[in-house]
Image 1: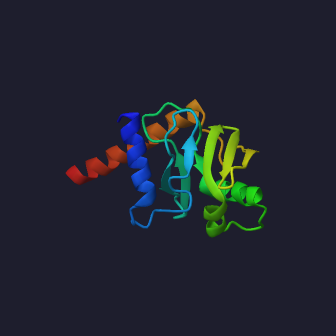
Image 2 (image 1 turned 135 degrees about the vertical axis):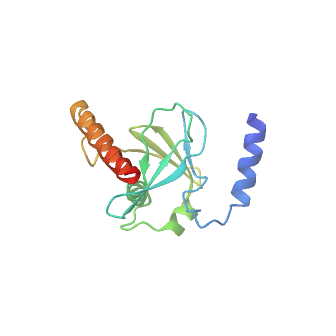
Image 3 (image 1 turned 90 degrees about the vertical axis):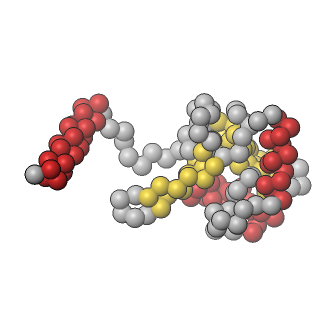
Length: 154
């Protein structure tokens, strides 16, 4: 992609968004300062069935910033807009762009030209597994896989 082609495609996508049901008020409005690309919305499903959405740089970029959880983005956006509860229409009406400057800073660019820099912190919900725990899990999963496949072949 040349910079010109990327810009042309980006402008086209802003004017003609795909109607896949995945377009939100944040689509095409959240960008990374480091790589210059728009962030993508990724959805993961927890064991409980709960869907969790994050905004991240596209794969294969080496930006090094953590994913921005959509609920946190809504919370910060509400604060920036001075409202109690997130309102997608108000966000669309007032915010032109959000730039992820770093793992600690978001820049909200308003349609009227104002900018608000907002600190943020990725909230870790679970501690990372220790190397010992990873090895234990790997052994357990190998055993489960073997038991399952041995059962099929007998």
